[in-house]
Image (cartoon, rainbow, N blue to C red; front, side, top):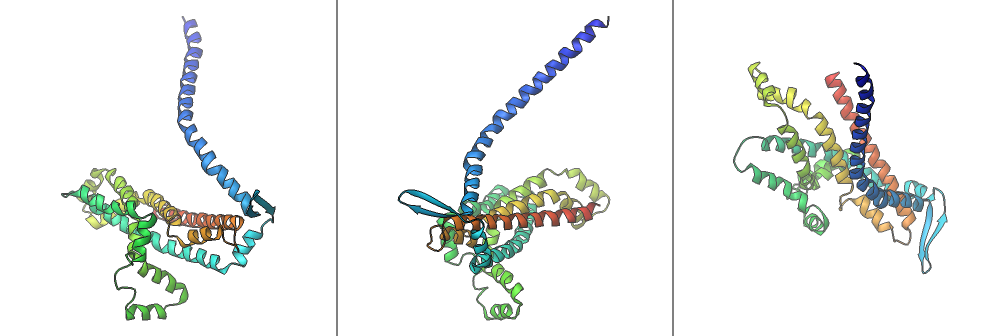
Length: 301
């Protein structure tokens, strides 16, 4: 009576293994397209740029000439080029100033759009519209015409005196905030949608139970909404830093691009600066990740 069962067990396991193999192959077929695209269009150019960064690259009639100079391009960028170092410091400060403002503004607008009112879809379109235009010559023209700042705020005598009285390490971030406040808010479109999608996934019964227990709307926000958005906030912060880092009006990127074919620069030198810039970006991402994880551990630990 037990003999058929002994025979059927291996067959069942073989069928399960074949089914898992087919599922794995189906998944690999979808992923392989991305892997090939990443290898050809990202990984190979990245490796080539790293190779250029340790060479002096010159272009002649015979082609591209490479002269191995070890780490001279990196030492020149860090210790001989004060403009690049100053731009890196300003980039880090401006990013650390912009990210909290974008997070707070995006969360507030997402909470507003999550309410039930008429023409909610229209307001979503209005807040997302700047994402479409914040690139290329359009944003460059808007910035050149002063559309990135609050009209007249940064040029008043009181503001000028206030900036003059600040220490230098505070003066640059505050000045950047005053002169680029509108531009900072323009980067909130995608972040608003991410927050809004997270808010719409929350269970309304949690808020109903909190209201029955006597919790106010303010207490529900601090005790329910904000902790529930902790992971979303981390994702939004990382996305914001990356978006600000490859923005077309980023002064570090413009400086690196200008040095690519400059007489005193070159492809090798600009490649080295690109990797230094990438290293600073990784440090900023690590700092934000560490701070938010530390806050989460203190809150839930």
